[in-house]
Length: 253
Ligand SMILES: NC(=O)c1ccc[n+]([C@@H]2O[C@H](COP(=O)([O-])OP(=O)(O)OC[C@H]3O[C@@H](n4cnc5c(N)ncnc54)[C@H](OP(=O)(O)O)[C@@H]3O)[C@@H](O)[C@H]2O)c1
Image (cartoon, rainbow, N blue to C red; front, side, top):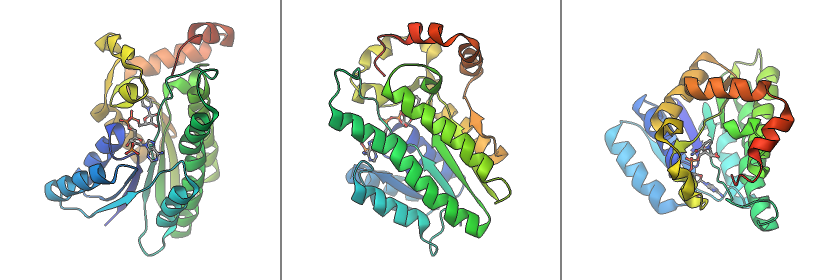
């Protein structure tokens, strides 16, 4: 049976990816730091959908954690045919406020881990002539709002280049760029004031994941879930960058 490996599977979008993929009959490998939460989810998933669930507790900001996941992704005896690079977090601070340790950990999880796991997956999948890589970016990629936006911009650009280079191999690469989505992201980053934003700007994890997986099936390279965010980002990308920077000033992603 086909197997998907999902990073950041213990919460939010990653948890929803696990549920939708298992419901579609895929075996799943769940990666995150919270082993207990992953085990709890594993029991629920295996009970509800008739699939195999594997737990891989790992901290992607550490060399050992990342190496363990890369090794699992590349394992020829237990092929992964969909890699979902989803783990991520906001620091909730400006560059001047945050510590360099936290900044490097964010870069390691949202850039280095995406690079290393995509490399392991692309090679293994290309050898088999099939597979897909799905990277979770953000609409922040088009905004000038600090290091989080820079990481998501890297993920977006990296995925576009990867998709081009993988043409003809049977392997596809997709980046999903969600807008504000109800998950634990904002509370964990001490950005609870975002919850005061009107409901109109919020997306549901279920819809974001459905849209991302549909794009993977179509081998679409970039997808921005919801018509309103896709339209808004079309406008943002056409604006002078000085206007975008002015609008982003002082935001804490
Ligand atoms: N929510 C939004 O509005 C929004 C919008 C655009 C993009 N995104 C992106 O969507 C992705 C998922 O975020 P979410 O909204 O679902 O947030 P979430 O509910 O806070 O989930 C984040 C996941 O990342 C995992 N994670 C964090 N640090 C990790 C590390 N060092 N090693 C391994 N796993 C780690 C967490 O698991 P553990 O704590 O158990 O390790 C958790 O499973 C992120 O890449 C985020 O940037 C979110």
